[in-house]
Image: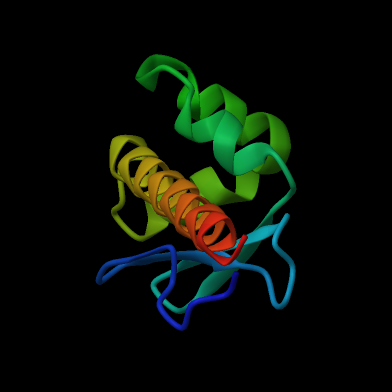
Length: 104
């Protein structure tokens, strides 16, 4: 389930699978900071209400908040990226599932 294209990428943020893992993700900020997003956390953050995202990020890795602040990225901007990555991941899973059905 690894496409060449990252789950999400813009000028400042990149979110993709961590190596060959389909459970863990990697967040790269301005090609300078790299953080592992452990299994289940992408979904949790993407489905969290906007006002609670910073608290949840702080709970699993407060250094991410430091990095986005240093790089001029708001929590809302990161949240949008996480949501987009989660949507893309779900879409890829759906496509693979449909391909499996067609092969059946």
